[in-house]
Length: 302
Image 1 (cartoon, helix red, strand yellow):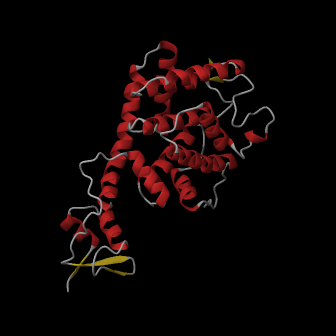
Image 2 (image 1 turned 90 degrees about the horizontal axis):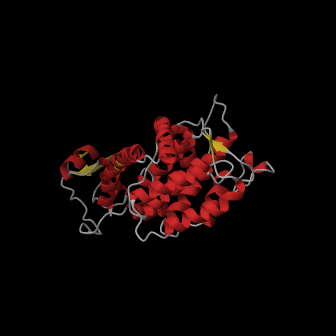
Image 3 (image 1 turned 180 degrees about the horizontal axis):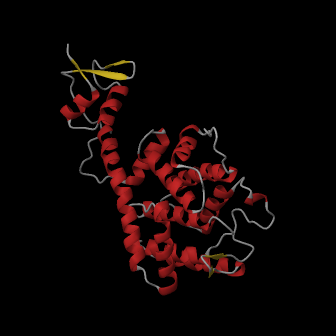
């Protein structure tokens, strides 16, 4: 009998090589066997039938994220979203961990370095950020509340050097005034009322649009309710809101942080939202282009 490689079978079946490997690993290809790390597949092997043909139903990103999180599916959309969002959001705030180091922490829960000197807070906040995203995926359809937002902050900043400071409120609103980009933010005594008003306004909308989500982000960052971590918490809320509304998530890349700050400032100070809308849509497109092929790979296995 003649045997074909994964690449040859992928072309024959018109699927990705990843799908072929998964079919083989799941025992769904009769006669396929491994030689070392290479799959040998009978030339006459038939493409496995999909066990769940729901082509008429829309593919919901949140469903895939929840399924892959529950099964710890490696190399999929959940895996990529965790690493890319955590790396970029932390880097915007000054983390020096590389993308590879971020990935290594996610995949192994260990730190693999030789000569590099790492900031302990960078490592802790990276691991904490993964936990925050998990909480968002699990609770994406739940109401957005002060309690939920404070829980995100509590998880993100737990066990960091800030958490050991008496004046730093972990999981609660700030005790001392702060500013961002030279702009004043809400005073500590104003934060609770402003956050309640913001959440009442947002939750009062029956169907949340992309513009509603963007407006919330602009106002949240202007309030700056926490002593530190507002940018990351704000971008995690953005993820939750997008998943809840079945809107493509906005993953803001570190390489574009100057644009992000500029357009955010224009929206906050001049009520000029157009540049920020265009920018968020471009970041959506980047994420979409990365995950769409992975969605169809994963859907093919269902």
